[in-house]
Length: 127
Image: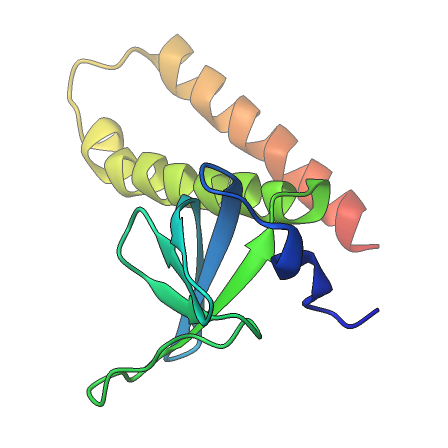
């Protein structure tokens, strides 16, 4: 079986994931099959794929797009991506928190302790 043989079994309403790669970044998003023709798979987002899994390209496209089955590996990739985005949001807000004048010494110590613990966990994973 080829890598994209699973596409032959798709039905309207099936969940899939779309991976978009552009300029060194990847983005994974869930989508659903809206319509299937003899030559094309059309998703709720409007993205169109040929039956071989290649995206229907527009001339201005400057990124790559891939369709994936809804499986554990791609769901994990999607969750990790979302956790990273949330982490960036949280960390970008730390500047305002740290400069907030009403934080007590205990609150600052708690923040530092938590961050040190996280830093140590990351160091262990890297080993």
